[in-house]
Amino acid sequence: MNSIGEDCNELKKQYDACFNSWFSEGFLKGQTDDSGCAPIFRVYQECVKRAMREQKIELREVGSEYCTGSEYDNANHSGGKTQPKPKS
Image (cartoon, rainbow, N blue to C red; front, top):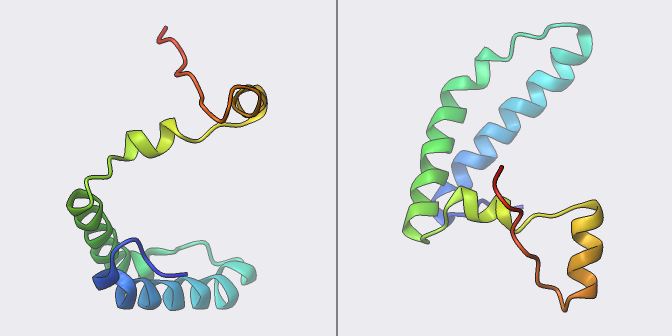
């Protein structure tokens, strides 16, 4: 799967390779320190944030469109539109 920003694709591949290597060669053998991938993750994360800003995507908007359980049922019975939950 590609990244949200085309210019982030190579960084995503590098991070995925690092993570997969750590997971299979480290984590599954009991080594939980994942700091080896942290530098490339930070660079990739900044690239994704920049791409989101350029595309005018705000993380809170993405989260508000995600629904589960009864919200999903309500969305299906109301023509696909969900109503935001009232703030407590």
